[in-house]
Length: 417
Image (cartoon, rainbow, N blue to C red; front, side, top):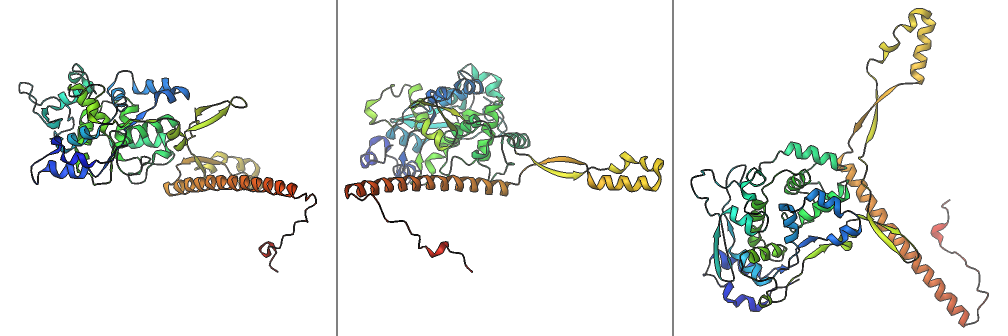
């Protein structure tokens, strides 16, 4: 983590004309903290035996894989502040913002500009897709890049969310904690900590999170270069106090352009990436501890949560027709017998309905409170055992072997008559 330094305010690379956008941005950025970019911890994914399933979802050597690889790089405050103070992205209109050009015979316009260590750069989105490390030059001419649709099919995404979550989609209330599959929940946290990172809770699932998560898991082409450019363009205008978490992606761009080496000591102390390993996984309650011996244990991801189904009995429609001829043979007595039989053994058909979001949240809150009370109870139990041991030790030192009997004078335990 790197706090702002007074020396940077006068650094030549951070000087801008009076009342310019750059001057306004650099003032804000110097009041913020550069923290390591959140990155996938492949070592811990291997330890919990899900690295291979993770690779199968991400795909080897894909834009998503390269994005997560870039997140492992260190950040540098000077480089990050200068870049974000000058970065602009002229967004392309249309459903496919990464399309190289509407007119093939005309050059693709430059939509991106920024400065690095005093050098000014201007480039097309296709060029940015390459220098950011997301795509190879050849891939920018393939459907994986040109057919990436920004205009999302929200209905399909919401249906997909309902299939992986314990509650229905709500743009204001949906949270990653309701995702039933632990590996998909981990992937959501990666997305919410990188290309859609924001100041509020990473557990909240925004519309942008769902769009990228759906595209990620289902291998749907999405405009990843546009998403990264749009994300970076908004970082310079965020309020003071917000953390800067995108430095690793800026380092990758600088390395691709040859601006810095792999170990640029002249940029000051690096801010290391934050691997989402044991601490993060435990905090997300994704792991279960497996004891293998007296002093040995390992971890595994928790099992997927079964889809919640509440069965609601509904009387079967047209039930009377099933036994319609029974009374004709036995007369009135037979009719009475059938009626009595139906009253005793009413047949139902069951309809699965999803738990209301409000009730689901209440249950989740109650579950968290129960776990908190459980931890508190265990702490009190350990404290009581410690007190007993201390009192026994004191009694032994005073040669007290027959303590007086315990008397409970607490009036609160008496029944009110």
